[in-house]
Length: 85
Image (cartoon, rainbow, N blue to C red):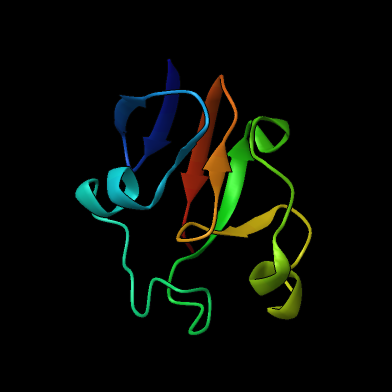
């Protein structure tokens, strides 16, 4: 099982899962959920290596180092700690 941490909460999900539903349930803001609006742009505080590589939508968003779009992220395994500024 993989683990997502956000805003002091922690939730488990199966390895290889998209994180969108879990992050949304934890209160992360979402807009389009398709990688176009950037509403769910977040910083990966810990566990960046535990996410699948950036996809095309994230590459097109021109994210800063350590940032991801939660709506497009897939956790391979382990723990990922997200933060929004």
